[in-house]
Amino acid sequence: MENNGNKLILNDEQLLASKHRNGAALVLAIPGSGKTTLLLQRTINLINSNIEPEKIFSVSFSKASAQEMNYRFNKFFGRNSSYFSTIHSFSYSVIKKYSYDNNIKYEFLSNPYSIINEIYFKKYKKNLSFELYNDIINLYSYSKNTMKKIKKCESVFNNSDINFNIILNLLKKYDLFKNKNNIIDFEDMLTKSLEILRIKKYNSYYQNLFKYIQVDECQDTSKIQYEILNILSKKHSNIFMVADDDQSIYGFRGAEPKYILNLKKDYKNLKTYYLKTNYRSDKSIITVLNRFINTNKIRYFKDYEGFSKNEGNVSIFINNNTSTSLKQIIYLVNELKGTTAILYKNNISAMLFVSYFLKNNIDFKIYDSLNLFMENSLTRDLLNTLYKLNKENKEFKNMSSIKAINYILKYQTDRIKIIKSNTFDYNHNQIIENIKNICKLYPNINDFIEFMLLLKEYENYPPTDAKLNILSIHKSKGMEFDNVILVDINENIIPRINNLDENKNKKLYEIKLEDEKRVLYVGMSRAKKNLYFFHNNYINSIYNKKSRFLDELIELNKDIIKIHYDNNLSDDEFIKLINKDVYHNKFKHGKIVDISGDRLIINFNSKIKVLNKNLLNTNFLKLTHL
Image 1 (spheres, rainbow, N blue to C red):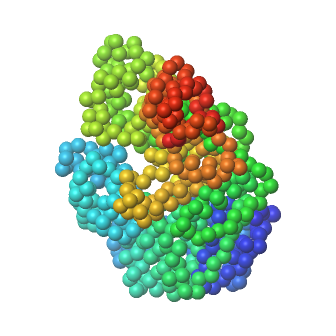
Image 2 (image 1 turned 90 degrees about the vertical axis):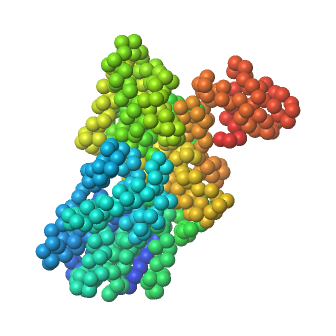
Image 3 (image 1 turned 180 degrees about the horizontal axis):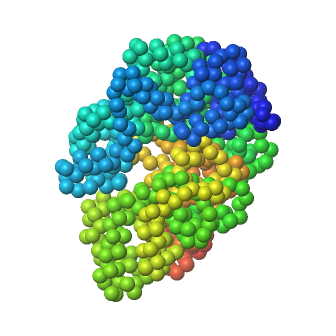
């Protein structure tokens, strides 16, 4: 697995798969098993067996992955004409050839917002919000990748604030505008190239151009991408696919593991290989990963083996509020050695960490845009109200930042559309929680305003090579870090089932639940030495249920996972324990009926007991809904 000078050293599993030459093959590879190493070695094996380098096409689904393969190949074997590319880059080259051959000029549109917003503005006399635009683009991408008409994709559109027919009409006009002006956007690269590849002349040209197709991260394939690959490999059937169906996490873009689960239907003589040795993670992390993902049913079964002899560490922190979690995470960041990543599913989670690290001059690298937070209608309305009142109201200027925010939330709600329209949800609670915690960092109202204006521009700052990284689970795919801290592992975030009713559509519910489990699994599998999970019982003083996946992890790994509970409730959080169900190791099930000072008054089957609150969430007394 390691390299020796300019020579790759492979294990027996990699060596066997790298020698595969002709016919279709699927390599099922667990995280950290050396997929890229295998693909590089197979490429050189083909070249050494007199296959012309330009006849080998290695395709990936991310630019970073394709660039890494190209870089590593050149490093170990020197430059040649073998082709490493993303599926979109290849599709663009097909369109360029077609446009040159037929004297048709296409204009590439990198950012559709201006056109979509112009269409929207003409009709409704207002600009499209960033949130709505984001939802529209996700819907559009899903439609293109699944090759379904947009009207058939309503179930994936998560914005209930606008009639779906308005979106249908908007996207119809957008497509008409593009077609009329020979414009193609990112999604059109795939649809247009597939259209071209179905023309006999181009079909024949590209099938003869590439005799061997290699596909990295094949589990990320959408229907349209799968169709393109099928056309390219149809003549020779020499397609070599490396995949881990357990890491298929782009369902919202139309990627589905079913394409690799059903490969034998399209490739009758498919040969299957296995890479089952994880070179990345320590032993305890590997065990937890294996036990967790094995509870999914729609998958290929894989054995897990670890290379590391170190035990590693897996810990879960269940805290009562964000402030406590932040303190613990800062402590870990300062104490842990090597690279550390703070991972989240929802980009809103990044805000508090970005704010703290900027305030304290701690070097970090963030991979995601802050737009989902800064351009959210709640954030925008709240901050605009704050800026306006701070200019107009003399008394307001003397308030602390937290007092000013609380004043607006209590007395100025008519200025905040999301509260006024009664469409407040979990994300909005988290936004308010983050803003209040940023207020604690900048108690002076003018300092707070100055900092929030800075954050609007922060995404334009150049990235650094800092050891501390802040990024979404989806962005972390393909990366590895010594320490991984997974935050906001809450039921409203992961899993997020979008109000699917288990009783009405059990099959769809279970599919979605497995999708969500794979997302958490990918985040967990980035860790080499230390893996931490964080959950907060309260967000903006509202009870916040922890993810069912944490319950599952604890149940499956009682011999491995260390659990840390926090009993430091604020007064608001503490009083909300009244009527909560508890379980005591001696008195069994009970209900908190009152609170007096630091005492819990609990009814255990008609017997009243008075217990100290410090017992809560210890081995003696637990809230049963945690």
